Image 1 (cartoon, rainbow, N blue to C red):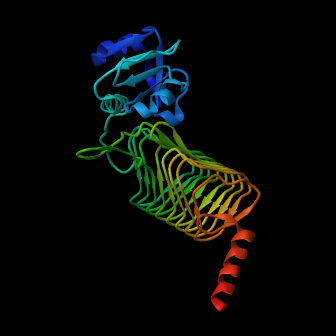
Image 2: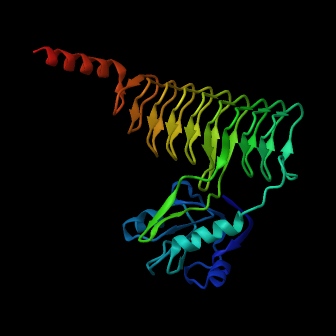
Image 3: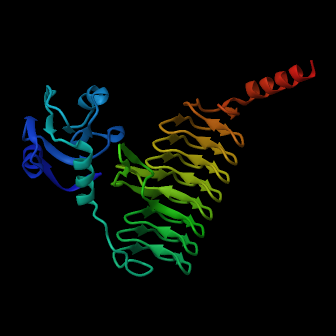
Length: 304
């Protein structure tokens, strides 16, 4: 997520009562978790196993729980609880807001858009021209729908990410600093959920169609002209290429990449990256022809 007002590492160190290591003049223009950091971003690390990953990332400023050598061109802010500080910074940038009425006054609605009874459009949301929002659907804070988007009855677009920090006392939710973008011609069926990004934008590409009860996790990127049948579930940070077809009840794990023109047959479970242009089946999903041969071999064993 980008900051409304960029700052510097030295300014943040004073604000947070943090120990500054490195270049205090380093500019901070965004806040991102490690999967999405870019130059100018602040991120955090609080476990020694991931120090090298964070220090070697594109992030310019890193919240860290122990003093260590700072890479050139970066700044470290040493604090006792980096995650707690990171979460507070995101919350300060995206504070809790009260929603007023069915369509928040700060929302922007395009021409010829139809909003059915009971639908809610949140603060700062942007809905393009010619859209159709079904009864009791929720378009969350800051969510953007381009033109000719359909959101079915009861669907939720832009709910908080299902993303938690495990602590001794239980699970602490991350404050989601990202949003959701549905591009032109996207159709979302009834009772679907599309989570906002933890720190980036969950995106569904132009012309893609979602059947009923589809779940898209935080920070996912769904390509153009994809078809996702009923009860498909895609976990966070996964990238789906263009012209992909996922049939009913396909489950896809987090942090994966699925290539263009991929078809995944019903009830399959995807646990690793898949090359494009192929059909897959089974759990774990493999090329369909191989999976069918394996099933035939098992049936032959039963007869012996």
